[in-house]
Length: 104
Image (cartoon, rainbow, N blue to C red; front, side, top):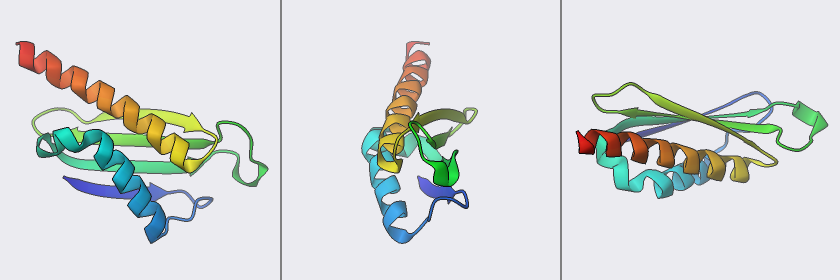
């Protein structure tokens, strides 16, 4: 499973952030890593310097092998919380999709 992190101009996409993002997503999706070809994380600061509640937007796109890409979005107050929320959402979505395939 390849991992890719993208940030907007308002979020500094350094090595530490890349490591935190990858660890968070892999912890949520580790049980599916053999079924995913790539996971992309997009982080954006919606309000830039203004701040505010839920101004960090995290979108995670997972590309399951043999299926259409699946994506979720989660907004939260900071980067780590946004990553955790989006990771939970993509895990639940993929577990549901793979569960449906298993029942067929």
